[in-house]
Length: 89
Image 1 (cartoon, rainbow, N blue to C red):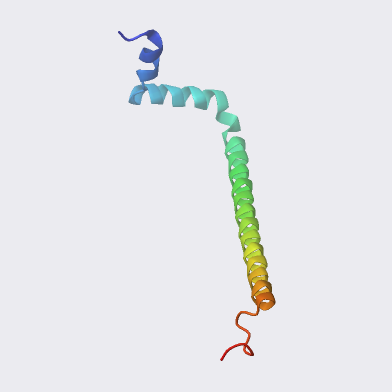
Image 2: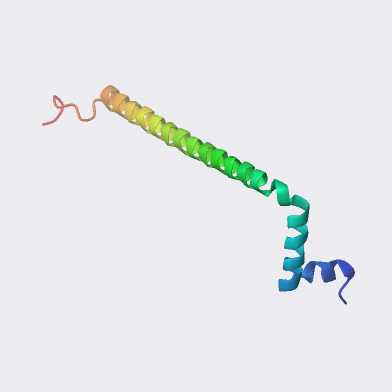
């Protein structure tokens, strides 16, 4: 047995319904559509800039961690005498 919530969730608008929705949206937002589109475009641009900055920041962090790891490994090798040319036979 299908209850009313499943019935509503199963309904998807067809071609005519989308056309009616589009016409109503144009009537309501018609004059403001260019303004809204501009705002959405600016928001997407800022979002992409933020994503790129976060990626660059994480890349820099990974590079810093690798450098520190290499320094620690080098210091550990120096302290233990591994790869010391004087110790090789």
